[in-house]
Length: 370
Image (tube, rainbow, N blue to C red):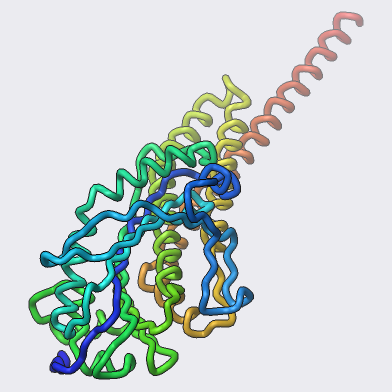
């Protein structure tokens, strides 16, 4: 059953972070990005502030740069905003807008503010305009820019200061489901359990509740480590979705190519090898990129961040996408292995024919001489 909201629960400080994450290229040279953005303002490599560097290991820490923040009004009140971009080496650019709570509010009013803030931010032209301007600057550092951009979106509601209850008591003091789902109708009990099952705390004053579309974070310190972790998880999801779709598009072409190679084997003896080499190159490329995605971040010593990051990967079904890609790569490997085997067999057949012809020729010559 939903908690009966307590009227004394008040949010004093908070912000709503709206993320838009885009696949823009096969890869991005981050050193080149830093050079391209020199003099643009704040340009730095991301580093989580909650933990020691050994606890969080970035494969290649993304470049972070500030953007011109859009002006927004929520409920007729102007709110302070911040905007930034994060550029990942595996070809993903993530834009974010933070909307700061303008004044303390009781929980019911804060819930409305968070919902309206996310809705207003989602409709901004800021996303495309800022992305296009940024890509124009970093284009020399991009490897094979994407013609069609896939994207993900996510929102993180972060409460910095809370009155009336501790963070760990918040799920019992108020109903978190409307904030996390934006549903105005009451959910069934099973649906409520699904929404709230990914809830984690480490101290009494922190809390993280994750869902597919958004998360609630209660964090009294000024760091944004949990938001950073969730952003990376969404970026990984996006890139895996992209390569899964790429392989879906490539498999029919590969099967057609293999069939054509077999059909013309006697006419074009090198067709087997060329087709197999093209398939092997595709597999190598996808494996290289997906390994870079998998190694984008490693959480080791920080138990809280590790649990949240692991929950995000489970919630976003990252393992499902990874397994799907592995299955399709296995099909391509089997295809090019079969083509190599057939190429070897074809060469052996031609060699046998050549040997037989030589034997016949020697026999004819011997008969003629005799």
